[in-house]
Image (cartoon, rainbow, N blue to C red):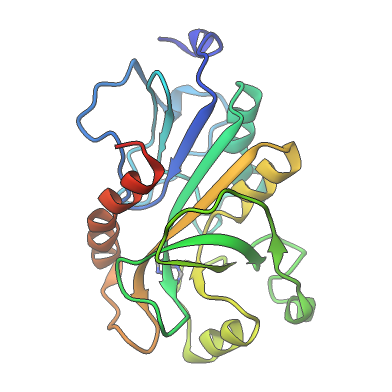
Length: 234
Ligand code: HPA
């Protein structure tokens, strides 16, 4: 299938996979399009991201995403979601790995995102006192039977959080922290398509040691089965 043929797909549902998260592993896609072949696609290079758009009959799977900490702009991070919308996708699922701020969380738990704080978008929050009075951006989505439902705070990264940042975010009402997903949610909400977002908790502040990126990948991998079961796409 070529890029032109994508336009003929009747599929309305897509999933964007974060680091180490996998669905339809070993299932042969109808077509597999490297991001590099799609004009203007931001080519993220983070380990654990394959960088392909796999087309299945009932689902488009985006294996990997670009982050602002890799040097991409906010607009570039929004591009893949806008591409999906422009190609007829009406339901988007977004996954990511995130650090637990809520002390009740455990490694491998799933948290459905019910609202988020955006510390990524340039000019809006980063390094700006306005961020301290920022309101959680809420959005509607179907309730999944995840371990938790909570607020995601999106940060620029690539560093993890200091103790002071963790307590600040906790005081602002955040339950988990990560470096993506706000661009995708904002783009989907603006376009009025259905969006569901889930974080896999790969470390918990005050509770677990820093496992590094490899640890994040391992935790995300082990939670993938749980996630695909919940989403009904196993
Ligand atoms: N902070 C930011 N992003 C993350 C974390 C974290 O602790 N864990 C996984 N992604």
